Amino acid sequence: MVEISFVVPAYNEGDKIFDNITECVNALTELNLDYEMIVVNDGSQDDTYKEATRVKSERVKVVGYPDNRGKGYAILHGIKQAKGDLITFFDADLDLNPKQIKTFIEYMEEREADVVIGSKRHPLSDIDYPLGRMFFSKGYNLMLKTMLGITLSDTQVGLKLFKKEVLEEIAPMMHVKRYAFDVEILANASRLGYRIVEAPIVLNFQRGMSWGRIRVKDIFCMAVDTTAVAYRFHILQEWSKMLITVMATVTAFLAIIVLYKMMNPYAFPLIEYRILYTLVALGIFGVVLNLPYDKFSERMN
Ligand SMILES: Nc1nc2c(ncn2[C@@H]2O[C@H](COP(=O)(O)OP(=O)(O)OP(=O)(O)O)[C@@H](O)[C@H]2O)c(=O)[nH]1
Ligand SMILES: [Mg+2]
Image (cartoon, rainbow, N blue to C red; front, side):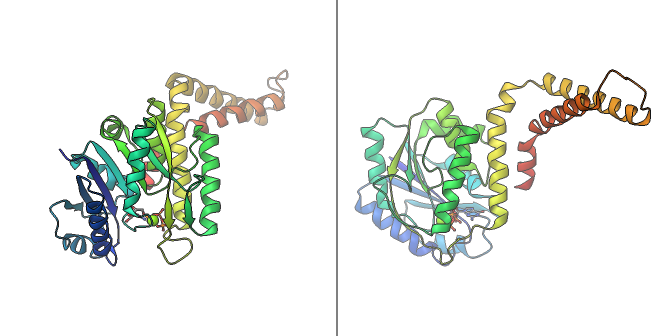
């Protein structure tokens, strides 16, 4: 049994992956950790897989599959093969120095945490990160607070440490495989009563362009995926299917009355248009809230 497994998702990281894994191996050896590293090639179109396998270390295992399925899917794939008592998600671009895991392990022990996540907003963090991204991250965090009641200051940092049993319980429940993966894991961990603690990080943004690899489409998909997570957490749990069916039926019935009244102005003289419109609008609102956002987001992914 190894002490700690590093799961490293990698997508089109061919130009850096050899150097980055080598740097990781050196850093973790220096820390004297009993570790394994599972690099998951997430259907890269470049030579990520070939470059990663150039690293000759019995502690490094490179796995993968042909099609790109998203960071979350890659991590779940890696977790299945992990043998450590602790499991770390670690981004391959090395925005974060792997040695920081030492602080995370200390935080886990000292604060009796089940999960330790890095936070750009921790008072002890040292951040070199584009302003636009910082702004976006703050906005996203506000969205999480409103929609999911998540009070963590930052869910998106590419270094997270979990006790194995947390992931054993949560991994089979995961729906999101791409954009809101971290949020879904943390929301589940918190719902199940696991203790999540935030740790400081030193972050050096490595991607040249100020927005890194994030595109407008990614921001849109992230909002959809996050809505899907919130949908599963609140609406799905609180509203029964029967209520949705009744609401849709009543709304359809009222809409028919409105149409009928439009064609026959003297029909139902006691029922006012105002009331009918309000009820139909409320009904539509209720039905829209209950649309299967999770199916939609799965298809987008
Ligand atoms: N963008 C992206 N990254 C993936 C994917 N699958 C795995 N990854 C890996 O997930 C990690 C995080 O992805 P990044 O593109 O760095 O995401 P980010 O850190 O939010 O964005 P940047 O600031 O541009 O680095 C990296 O190790 C990627 O190689 C994928 O489908 N898309
Ligand atoms: Mg990155």
